[in-house]
Length: 269
Image (tube, rainbow, N blue to C red; front, top):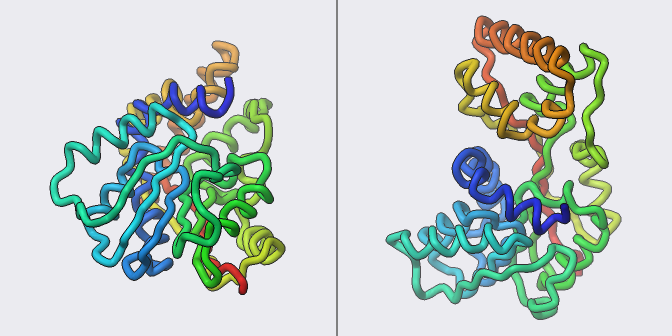
């Protein structure tokens, strides 16, 4: 399944269960980019449009805003959200576009003040091409803001630690946390024509309260693929260990978290 088909198939699940978890880092990123002062903005990996619509309701100085996603189904859901949303600033020339982060050829060179992409670059095989396109569409002195999951992500750490306990490995084609380190992200942007302004780790609490929430993640969420690959006996052992660890966390008043590395940089002149 290619990237487009994967996200098309996942779009409704993402809207129903995941998008609310990704809004806080997007809002923080927007603040650190000073997006409210920008006139021309491109958002790459807009998904179902939750952050898009927030911006369209709150940006007062923006003249244009382009929302890009590789998934046509994601874009369809985002358009529906915008259509049903009140309070949209109709003075902003806004468009949705189906496209790849590595090919933004429909956007003019040096036309954007801000490039924002939340939870995307870590899933792109050609990260250099991703940054080349971002740099191309940004004006000189324009800002880029990115987030990526940290290696020590709370929810996935719970799953991966317990996979290791039962002697199994995740069926990832590549490590999705390979760039989830502050020094790696800083070097990646510095090596590709950007001057880093800020880089920080964020922690966002996930609304998982009961065993049923964990079971839902195992059957439908981010752990679905490697849980489904286990034998029935391993599934029982894996779930038992996770539920036990989750109970210990709650006894210590520790919520499950999503841990991210966020970075803001300027295109060097």
